[in-house]
Amino acid sequence: MSESEPTTPPAPADFIRDIVAEDLQSGKHPLSVTRFPPEPNGYLHIGHAKSICLNFGIARETHGRCNLRMDDTNPTKEEVEYVESIQADVDWLIGGWADDRLGRKVPGDVSGSAVLPSEASGRTLEPFFASDYFEQMLALAVELIRRGKAYVCDLNPEEMSEYRGVPERPGKPSPWRERSVEENLDLFERMRKGEFPDGTRTLRSRIDMASPNIHLRDPALYRIRHATHHRTGDRWCLYPMYDYAHPISDYLEGITHSICTLEFEIHRPFYDWVLQSLNLPRTLPRQIEFARLSLGYTVMSKRKLLLLVEEGLVSGWDDPRMPTLSGLRRRGVRPEALRAFAAAIGVTKYNGLTEVSVFESCIRDDLNLVALRRLAVLRPIKVVLTNIAEGETHWFDAVNNPSNPELGTRKIAFTRELWIDSDDFMEVPPPKYFRLRPGGEVRLKYACIIRCDEVVKDAAGEVVELRCTADLETRSGGANAAKKVKGTIHWVSAAHAIRAEVRLYDRLFTEEAPEADGRDFKSVLNPESAHTITALLEPTLAEARQTDRFQFERVGYFTLDVPYSPTGVAPTSVPLIFNRTLGLKDSWAKEMAKK
Image 1 (tube, rainbow, N blue to C red):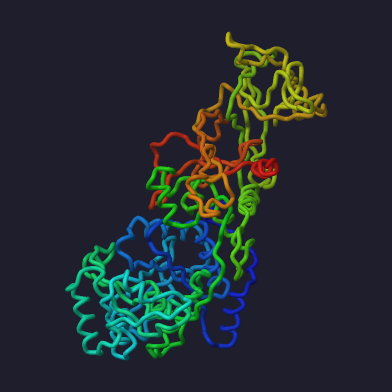
Image 2 (cartoon, helix red, strand yellow; image 1 turned 30 degrees about the horizontal axis):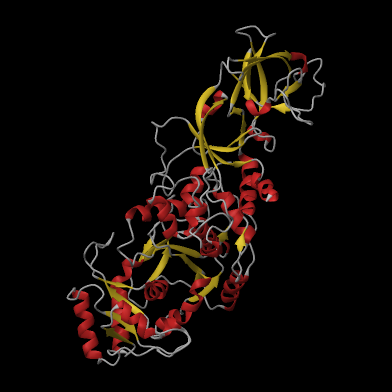
């Protein structure tokens, strides 16, 4: 199974899907239209994956549409790099789902702009941009001024915050709240033309300075910002605030259900106020909130993830230890696992911390079915089989995946000199140690039983070689094939093994809640979260592809390292590098049990 062949699990059930179903059944909307609107000021992370799966999932399940929209209303923080990475990440996560995931804008006036299904699907999402609607947003802001629902305010940001007050007591009206419509229109036009410096004037809504909801105390609609925009260049120096751009963009795209995380619940009255104040002709979108994902041993803030990148604490946004989608992809997590995880945790109205073991279990369940089994020795020690002649080679069959017989078998070479993992030998082992020891026997996986006859050490007393005898009659089909030993270990032929760099990644933080009790999240970075070693692998791994997933037997799940590229094409000049996705078992559970 490849990454382009996604699984299609049964549709989940939750309160948001119930609302959408009811609205469709009642005829309120003939078609469900959702959207995923990230700001291109960083890379998407696993928290966004939950929202992507929810919004695109609802569209797929109801034969509706979901728009990918860039909320590019803040030119000082947004970059083309982030736009490209978001497109790549969303397409990777939902690739192969129905073509109705795509949309294309069509011309229309302010009241009738709409979205049609894309006529050209392919593998590239065509995103919408809030910046495409700047003219319509401006026209609607002028209409709010004409209706007496917006005014130009000369308070600076600090003064505006002071006048707004606190939830427990009313705010104070701005001294410029009662400006005439004519004066407001003139000042707003001059703001548009760039006559005033940043921060000197804002366009504010006129609602209620005594509202217990502080977000209704005349919130700002526009601010002056002389900055170059990644798409519109220097055309604009006046930019809409998110809380204004959000409902207008939703309406212009014909969104029916605007699904947000819980922190926007308190903003919903303003969302509704904007749309209702304009007397728009079409049915208005409905905002619905759900609990965002909080995952153990992880931080989700793009601002904090950016700090990790800028301070060199990780190698980049796609560092395999990062919770970004590009980092998870580089680590070998498949989109199927992320979609299964999103379905498993469900959609609720209550915030809570999801244990990272739940996520890792979804990854293991997915990889177990598709990962090709391979032999790899990470910390090698040499074994010499004294009863095998030099140049003598035996070939054994090895299954590629016992859970998926369709993946077939391969031949592996068995020669006089082998490598085994140093962890699989102890000169003085503890009780119940079933791997190799002096005078002991162990089975080599897919091959035969060997006995350790002699331990060779160097001048410093370090073990450098084990001299053993192979019982070839204990191989499959041999006269003693039924002979039992308690231990089975992995190995590679010294004559055929290839060398590769293997990167062993672990959790980025040592604490489940890195930001608990107000501590600096960087103070609990895991110093053991990344190790690089040179390993010896069976030769078939030289042909690994970026879409392959592997289980290094008895070691863990691994993938070929592919640094992020907007084109999705792996560089051809890099050495052979494998990243550990995760171990075969949750080793952290044992560590936590010790505490």
